[in-house]
Image (cartoon, rainbow, N blue to C red; front, side, top):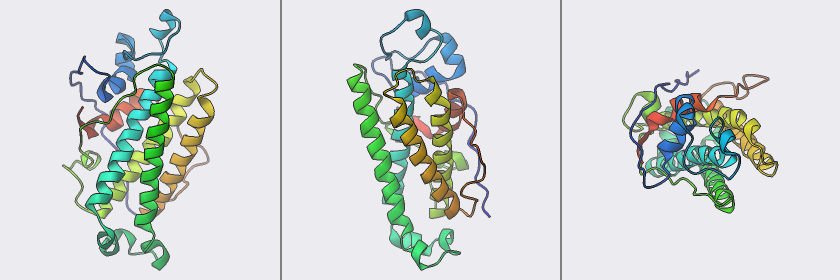
Length: 235
């Protein structure tokens, strides 16, 4: 059974671009230390005093959008890097039968498409709220969770995919209870359950139990920041 590595909990305190609402400003602004200093600039209208102490719905949606951008870019770029032949030759699928071996890459492409749909949905929701949606980073290092510069193999790809999906599941579980607008709660929970489906599939491919616990742990925003910030190289 392959062990999935944990991501580095340290954060990169790079300076943010003041001219636009960036991914790193969202992540930093929603981490514990940055919340104490002030929230990201793109906030929904509401009580100013409350906005100083807790993230607004738009902050939470942009936080989720940052994660969805990362996940979509990961699948998009990695599936361009590794073709069907790479999957067939990979040690990842050695213990699986014909059905799994010849559907794995297609199913991962479906996950990619789901992440793109999540990006589009969250972008539209933020725009409809009168705020500016965060854009995709210009550079990621998807090998960061493995201590590498990039991915060397399909095994690397599947390992990092599990890390990202599990982080996404825990992030939605942690952030959803803070949403105040009831209209945002059903889609947030719906995305959360789809991310859990993705995570279970990746865990199975990696030789891990697809559903290891009766209850998943929710992660606070500062924990999620520590997990994904090293992957974001350039805004």
